[in-house]
Structure formats: C-alpha cells, structure tokens
Image (cartoon, rainbow, N blue to C red; front, side, top):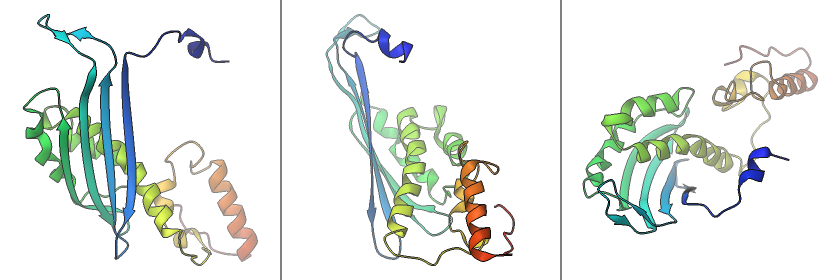
Length: 197
C-alpha cells in the first residue's frame, strides 16, 4: 500500500478540476473545450489579513479548433467566468498566439514559451498544455469511428510520429513499438518497415 495514501486523514483544503471534451465538426475538424476550476474549500486570509471565504477561485475555459495532420490549432478562444482579480481577463486574447501550433512533440514547451510567465496567465497556460494530449485522443477517437485500411508499413501508420517517444511504453525500443513491428512483419512478410518517424 502507498505510504503517502496512509498519511491522508483530514478533508482537503483545495480542489482543482479539469474537464476536457472533444466535439466533431465537418471536414474532420474538431472543437476541444477545456475547463479549469479551482475551489478553496476552507476559510483563510488574504496577504493583507482580510478574511477569504471558501469558494471558486478560478473558473476558466479554453476552446481550440483543430484539424489537419499533423493536428494543428486552427483557432482559439478563452473565457473567465470567475477570477481572483479583476485584471485577469486582460490575458484572454493571449490564447490567439497558439493559432497555427501543431500538436506534436515539443507542444508543451512551445505553449509555455508563447504564454508562460509574464507573457500570459499561468492557469490558461496549464489548461492549454493539458489540452494537447486530450486533443490528440479526441482526434484519434473521431478518426477511429470508421474502419481504415491496416497499415503495411510504419509510413502508413497515421499518427505514429505523435506517439513515438511520448512515454516509456511508446519509446522507439519500447514494448508497443516492438509489437507493432512484429505484427507488421508477420502480416506483410518481407515488408520494408521504413524509418521510425
């Protein structure tokens, strides 16, 4: 059993919820909608000593239009129904900087470079980073609704470049790639497996 799990005895003081949904459109485009909600679950005090009541601290949404291959952000918008400061919404237009960004290896770093720190809102940046993998999952789920021809080589394996080296299991020499290569070799005989990209 987890040692840290055993340390949890009381009720939480803070909760963050992320909700991500993907909606299909025409022309193989999709809208990915992400919501971030931070809630303070206990009473506290501001830096100046004034009391802070429990309640929602952040409630914000980002929507991105994606399409093409590699999956690319075609449009973006954001809203902030609840914020801790009246100036927070001044960062909303910054999300337009991600238009044209491809959701490929290095996506998180590019988003952070464009919107992180003093260039934008930390919470919007976090949400947009998380939305990258959700967008890919939504795209593949939508794509898989129809039967497609079985790839005969790695070059025909749509989306493989987004998966390779995305985690330990999908490493170039990892177990999933080994299974794919073995399956391709068994199904195709002496097939040219091509480069792994």
